[in-house]
Image 1 (cartoon, helix red, strand yellow):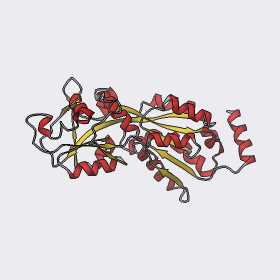
Image 2 (tube, helix red, strand yellow; image 1 turned 60 degrees about the vertical axis):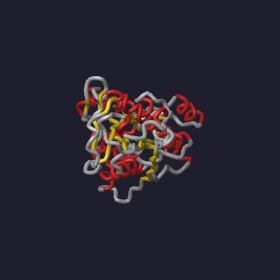
Image 3 (tube, rainbow, N blue to C red; image 1 turned 120 degrees about the vertical axis):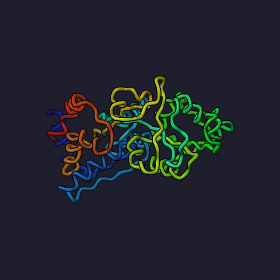
Image 4 (cartoon, rainbow, N blue to C red; image 1 turned 90 degrees about the horizontal axis):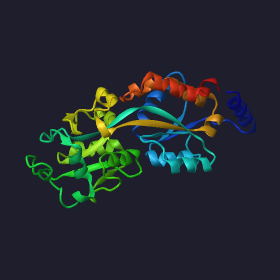
Length: 300
């Protein structure tokens, strides 16, 4: 603890402490930051936080090039990304945020897709579907003969990496895949097209509940609806995941004033903000463990 305090004093003596925070990365995790910013802003009306939801991969790149103070990621940082951070003098501090599920959605105008197996999802999105699975009738014979459109975020997003690995396709995808910039864009495209299917975080599906329908997935033991219980228990299978913050330690050391107070509030009330963002919280023990690892934030 004394080491951190001494380092802070030295840095702030040599150069002004950062007055404004910058968040970059996952738009899956962004709602947690938004919830914290809204709460903090009520008592700190002049507080400024720049948010750049560019996807997990791009956000981690900003972290490792000293352009972002802290980032959100819908996947764990890769070894090569950690290596790049270390080479740049950045020590990424990992903070597990909450549990999430990637869910399959169709338009509320689509009444025929009742559930899908994980193998159905793999076939719909895989490269072998190109030119073959162009109609819903090709997925299941009793489905409508309606053009099928597969939608989801682009390759810069951690959700892209996670989803396609989870269904067994790696990074390979059908050539007519419609990639989007943000999950909200995926939701809007699917909502407007009865033949479209997309994958989004559960929180986004809830935000568009009037326009979208979540499709239960059969992982081998019957169709499973995503819920806090099925996510926490692991019954929602390979499409459940943990989300993360990665903090730029040198920038954190330099932070002062309201920037420091915001980070302190975010870290010490993380469970509350995760709930506000419609994500599933981790166990109290996991948040306590995180507090121990980044506990110096409370005493800056």
